[in-house]
Length: 391
Image 1 (cartoon, rainbow, N blue to C red):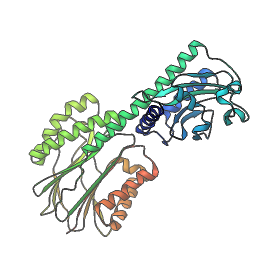
Image 2 (cartoon, rainbow, N blue to C red; image 1 turned 180 degrees about the horizontal axis):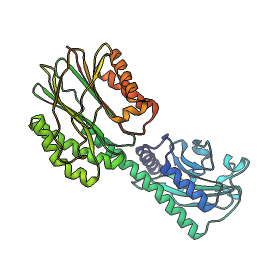
Image 3 (spheres, rainbow, N blue to C red; image 1 turned 45 degrees about the vertical axis):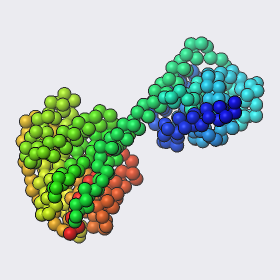
Image 4 (cartoon, helix red, strand yellow; image 1 turned 60 degrees about the vertical axis):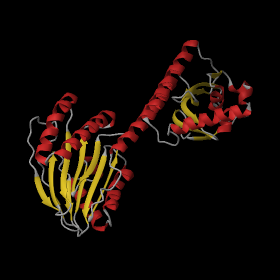
């Protein structure tokens, strides 16, 4: 019997950990629920508590400022999870289950407690949506139904997070994982989404001594932008793999214009074809405008644009530009989310040029540029792609 209980507990904790929600920052989608619960029931506090192996993690609270971590032995919601059933305690000071609990013995004490279990998508009880008050009270049948409905709301958010995590994994799988191994060249990229998934992507593939690389930014953030970006990536990769640049962008536009028009969206794209033997770079900049060639001494030049974003003006013909990357020069392309960390574009360019002058590799340059997103927080997706000629 004990072995069965141990296995159940292991499965429960594993399900909680699979949600990847422990120790995450506060989120409005959970905070909203506890604010509503506190207001609807007119209680001192409401919280979403998750029960780990030896502790309680408070994901959201209203009326319990500063409550984040609690020993499991002190947790009132631990009893709700253990029962895997609603727990209503009209007066905790007379409840044997809560005898000696610090939440009940402190001033002001918890007198009323109501907990509704929260389940992971697999059905495991991982936490509780709870109400507490400093005065004894009861919950009517209707109020208990409302509490259960609010808990179902939290459970939907927990399930949605799991779906977002899987979507993020799939989106990351679409990004290139390996270096194309072109002698004399380094390439690196990083995409950091403002939400779990986003509308930016980068891509590269090799065709003999030619390298095709792309950075695109779909208008918007989150799931809608991510769905569009997957379609844009597939079309661009397919057309540029088998056509010359001018024909490829024309065919890509023909395929994407109806989709983007229906979605009411547009995409800025920088895509370039490199001859690794000569350093000649043929490129199309469709409304992107954030591609630079950086010298090892801090010098830089900004590449020309070719026309508006894809989807902005149906039927547009884009000009193919040509430049040459000399030994030691680096092509750096960023999405507009990178600009959010600077006062203006000139400051952003100067910062990128300075970082390139001291970065030993393309990967180090990408890491430094991506560091702005990690240190400052994200309001928009931020993507960085760097191609360096080493000889």
